[in-house]
Amino acid sequence: MDKGIRNTLFWTLGFVALVLILFVSSFVGSRQLTEEQLRELGYFNLPEAQALEEFSLVNSEGNEVGLESLKGQWSLLFFGFTHCPDVCPTTLSVLNRAVNQMDNSPQVVMVSVDPDRDTPELMGQYVQGFNPNFVGYTGTFDETVNLADQVNIGFAKMPGDEPGTYLVEHSTSIVVVDDKANYKGFIKPPHQSEDIASIVTAIR
Image: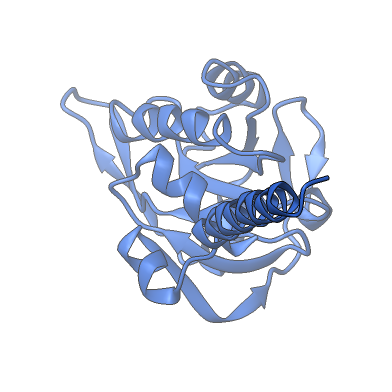
């Protein structure tokens, strides 16, 4: 092979390799976000992850669930209720779009803050209307408070527009739990599917 042609070939291959390295580095780097960038996306990381304590609720299938149900995979917890007029359906729609943008998407669990009305069957029908893989948890008021308090979620009944009716005011942050059932942080509203996908990909 002519020396000039050989040198040109080597330079061309070297240039292609460099471009590929830069492309891969850029792709990987785009998944790594600083603490400040995460905050700009709405994620607040706890200084130290907090191990959750045992709880006892019932899932959409009518089976009792506890701490073990949050182990082995990352989870996004959202506290809401099926009679919620706006925030809950909006958030679940955003979460559906977010998980569809992720590889190895996290478990999404909606925990009812209205256990008097939200039966396991109703919770299942509600959350699976947004995504067949979403899970609903419900249970007694005390057990709901037990879990909610651990992740800094507040809720309270408020009188409705009609006599005898009520709504439930509740925190709308999305709680992030790692695969060891540790409370890692929360994503504050307003929620954007692209931001949630970026956050989970970066911190996982």
